[in-house]
Length: 130
Length: 399
Image 1 (cartoon, chains in turn red, brown):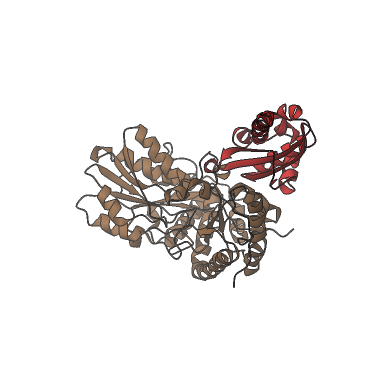
Image 2: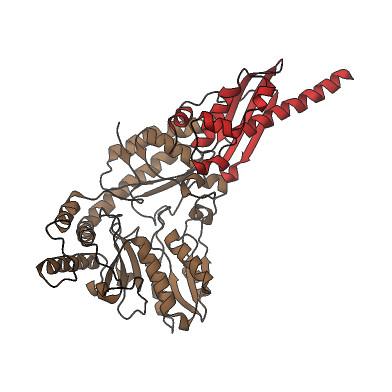
């Protein structure tokens, strides 16, 4: 039911963990529904220098989380924002149709982390101006 | 790689003796049991022999056993057949909230036709209360259908007590039980249970798929499920699945002969598995009743992780099991049974069912106990829900 690529990422997920001093944290999903993804990013000069994830969920949830971290590590914020859930699924060689809606949320978690980073940065910039 | 099959509540392999009994009925004894010539008579007598064996296993008269295409058909027939034949006496049905979907969806379907259905709650072990059944009865009640044992959590329901209580009433209310999970696993006797209808499936007892039976007590007013030819005493039309029925008969015979021995062996393995899991892994909940449960059923929830990823990891180690998570239940909701016993959604998503069978050994149980803690730990370390900081929750074996 899952592609080889999905199983490969599921078996050996990349970038699992937390970043204690993360610049941005994004969380999507809900444990009640069976999926919760949390993505941590460290940003330097507008580039995602480090990224880690923690995911509660099915095989697709874990594989997409792993894949998205691999896709954007070392990329600029703007490049990362262009990554969609669909692109993550495609990079994994596709997902079973039933998984496309419920478990394909990794790009959303990434975008949430970037938004969090931007919010924090704005606050910091304002504070510095004062 | 070593493979350990622990999903016997899902299905079982056809036993060699069963297959051997079936084979001639595909080829040299291919006759249609309705034909009067020798081929037909051979098929007919094979069916009757199988009927006797199935009847014997449940303490019934062979004339009360009707072959069907499986447990789902038996449940559909029992419920729809009673409802439609007795609707002049009332249109109320009582069932439980933890029934198999073959019962639940059939009841829901009848609601659309104007029947009223009461779905009784269960306690934290999954037990239906006899008094709840009695309290739910109205002047309109025509049928009570409660499963003998639950397919997911293994809890055995007080069917004999309910049967006894229903008999004391001054009005006839038909009593059906889905015994797909109990027949051949624990002693089942239709008179002791006090049931009028009882569903059985062959492939849960090392028989072939696509064949089952419905026990219908003499004098029961029921509509046929299939109309057509005069097969099965005009109650279930359609040319009989002769090889399947023969295999079912053989499987029933063997199950009866080995029941006590298997019951004891499986109970030992089950308890070893439950004890081993709860000792080795923290944050585990045993689902179902601790003792009033099927001898081969283990069902646990591991907090903070999700069932499908657990199954995939087990599969990579050759272990075949099942779960009640949304991903494996085929819907967005986790198992209705786990929700009915009061588990929160996020805990229900982390369920694992291991169901033992004839071929499982103590070595298999040891292998699962060796592999499982590491998988749970790996997934928990990946889970944002797991309170991992400090390391005091590490999976270490406690003695």
